[in-house]
Length: 160
Image 1 (cartoon, rainbow, N blue to C red):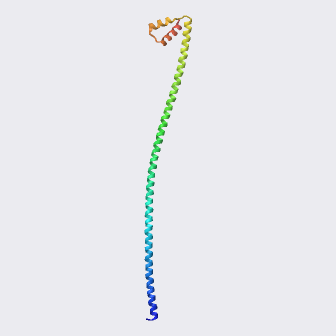
Image 2: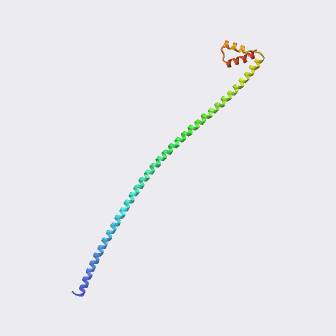
Image 3: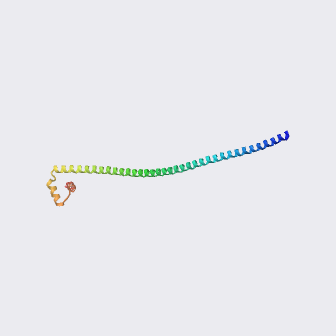
């Protein structure tokens, strides 16, 4: 074998080795790319699991918020009802105070009338228009109560 043949044979062998090496390198790159793809898919799956959990937590938070809003609405309804009751109670209290004021006016008027009647009785008694015996006799004949007796004495004194 000549030198040229040896060189050509070495050149072919080195070319074949180089081609094999390139093929193996390409296979290695593909394997690495597949490993990287598998790792990326694992990371993506994990991220999707986290996202699903976050959505579950969000749904639970929205349920709690809805419940809180229901409680708030109920509390506001209760507050409105309580304020209505309070307003009604204040109206009743104002009416009661008006009635009390009216009753006090009537009582004051009745006391004025009583004072006037007593004044008349005192004047009549002092001037001897009647005696205690007259009052007892009037009461025995008519079976009157005290206010009726007083009214009878006053009216009879004006008739004389």
